[in-house]
Length: 73
Image (cartoon, rainbow, N blue to C red):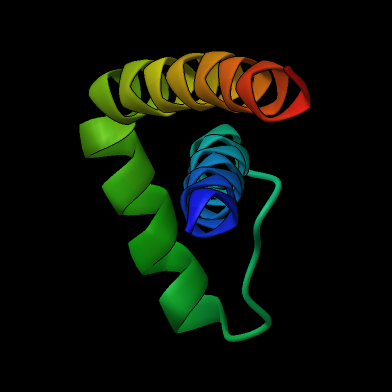
């Protein structure tokens, strides 16, 4: 059961990294219409999404480190 929690923490870390890459503009679409919608969404919501992504990455990294430390002791 302990490993299941670790798996979920890793999943949330990956979600945070994906969200950060999306907000920074590294995630793109081939369809120009969808890309324009993504750019508009990033323009309107970029500042708080970036903060949320950084916070999620920081918290999940700390949780994973503490979880691994707990599993090893």
